[in-house]
Length: 207
Image (cartoon, rainbow, N blue to C red; front, side, top):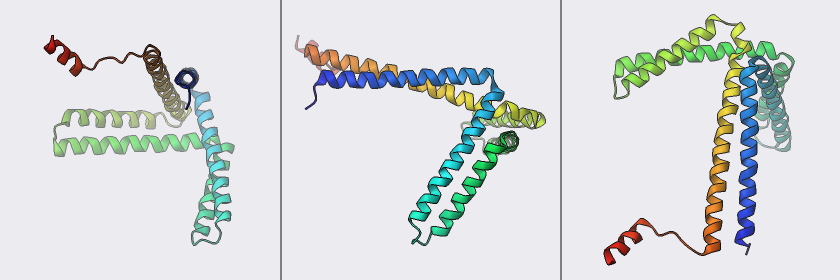
């Protein structure tokens, strides 16, 4: 059986590394918000490499299971991923323009559907749904009217915000986890267990 103190130090160290990783993501997100063009190219290159590596892994898996009935489907999907990854890596600017256009159309269609749905249904969340629809429509129009120049910063902005919020979440988990581990370790050392509210009420009633 592992020593509780040793296990507590190991957990605390793990949560500490989680906090460090969160801080690095926050710094990367802040840098990306300042240099959105670089963040856009970085996100495109990472996306391309993910497609390429995923395609290679899928191709190896398809070859390994070449006796199955889904062999050719796996080969086709893997080949498409590899081809898409190569295109994205070789032409990150063009890919960013295409994905920005796609994002603008998604914002537009989503905003229109929310606006129409909120007006037709008029449910309990009418105001919130109407506001979401108007915001999505406005965002889609802004990105579309500034296209293709918007492709230089839109994807980088989203990528940087995702890094920033993920980093803040990891920091909160790391700090909170270390605090809980510290409290549990102190209680195990002192041998004291805090009384629950029900026990406290019973004590007061007995007194």
